[in-house]
Structures are given as C-alpha cells and as structure tokens.
Length: 349
Image (cartoon, rainbow, N blue to C red; front, side, top):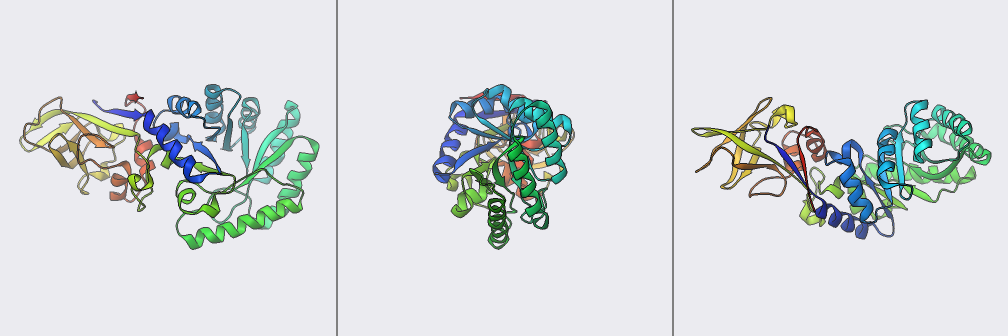
C-alpha cells in the first residue's frame, strides 16, 4: 500500500467559519461520527475546538467520551445513540448531552442518573417521519409528560428537542417540520421549554433558513463534502479538506498500477463507471480495483513512484469524494469513511 490521506486543517477551519457565517444566529454543532468522517477524530476535534466550536455531535457515547477527553470540560458534546446501561453510565461520567428517543431508555436513564447522583442534560427526539429512531407522534404527549416528571425529580434537565429530516424533497421536509413544531407545542404544554431546538443537518442548514432554529448539526459540509446531486463545494463556499493519494507501483504498456485497492477502502464498483484519477498529465480512467492494487489508464512518462490523486484537490482533473459516489449511487460521506484506518493520515495546517 502506498496510499496516504492528506487532511488540510486550515481548510477545515475555513469551512467552519463559512458554516457559522451562513447559519448565524444559530450555533454550529460539528458532527464527528465515524472518526470525524474518516479524517481522524483527535486532530479534527482539536482544530475545531481551537477555532471556537462549542458543540460536537458524537453519535455514540464511546465517541462522545473520546471527544470529551480531547476538549475538556468546556464544549458541549452530544451523543444520540445509547444502547445499554453501560452507555448511559459512560455518558454520565463524561458529562455528555444525550439524545433520547425511546420511553424505556428514558426510564433507564432516570435510574442511572439517580444511581450516580447526577442530573443529565437530555435532548428529546421526535420521529418526524424518517424513522431513524425517535418517539412516534402518537406516543409523544405521554413521553414529554414523563420527561417533565423526571426533570422535576432532578434526574434530567431537558435542554433540547430535536429530530432528523430526510432532505429528500422540500415537501417531505416541510411535513417533517410541521410535526416538529407540533412536538414543541406538546412539550411546552407538558412544562418543557428547551433552550436548544435542532432539526437541520448540512444541506437544510444552508438552503432552508427556517429549519435552523437554535442549533444545526453539520458534518459533511464542514469537511467540504458536498451533497450528492447538489451544488459544488465551491458554489457553497467550502473547500474539501481531504486528498487521497496513491503511488504508481508498476507500469505495463497502456496501464499503470496503483498501490491502493479495496482493502484500503476504494470501492470495487468504481471500476468501469467513468471514474477518473488525477495525474501530472491530467485525468486518467480507473480501469480496475483489486484487493490491494488498482489499474488506471497510463500517461506519457508514467513511472514507478509517481503520485496520483484518487479524490480531492491535488494535481489536476481529479474529482471529489461525492463525484466518485455519484457514479455508484451513494454519497460522498460513504467514500470518505470507507478509507481504511490503516491508510496513513497526513495533517497539514
């Protein structure tokens, strides 16, 4: 393997500034799930904290605890998946904000908080139609009443109400927002008035101001990964922060072999789709992706040791992770997170 993933932390900081300027006065929560979308959790979190990011979205409690270890006690760290009592205890110990979208889990959290002598910051989740966990609307009134009781008992502090939206169409998202507004009204009727309301992720946070509320959860855009089928990163005012490179390991006639393959995270399905890599002589077709090597169309003067850019800003003619993703019907985040943790990360600032 000769692959390397270069991560530009200066570009990350510029993207964070761009997102914050766009969504203000709402605050930014930087989502760092999946090892900060494959870019490396610790360096990304450190750079973001130094840039003044006050909210981090960690997905699970284990990642949340890792973020807390990096940032210390100041920033808020939100985790929205807890699958066991151990997860709840981890969250309490690390001082995490917890997303709770299940009545049984709410009860278990109440028990864990009482056992620990703690008051846990909680964000209640309503299912607005995406069905990515969350309390169904028919169960929501009883759920928020019970949360209000646990808050009165001191076990929890309901600081947020939130949800996910599909971002598949404006009409579907409008329907989801209607449900979300209803959920806020029901929470208020139960005596819950959360200071933090959050509904939007990357695309909606830029395109739909009415979805921003108090906080937006942005992952992909902060890393310069555009939405599939959406505006380019440049049009959004963002810069891709990652560049995946590999070296030429052999040249055979009209083909050059690269030291990167499926085991390094490059999807085999990209071969023959029109995917290109960037070389010193321009774009060249990606012909085959094997387990440990790939084959591309050669170029004049190609030699062992030459550097090829698989995706990201680099030589010339290369595409973004989303450009590759669109060729195989997926999203840019998937291409980014597939890059093996064994591929060295090189940080540039």
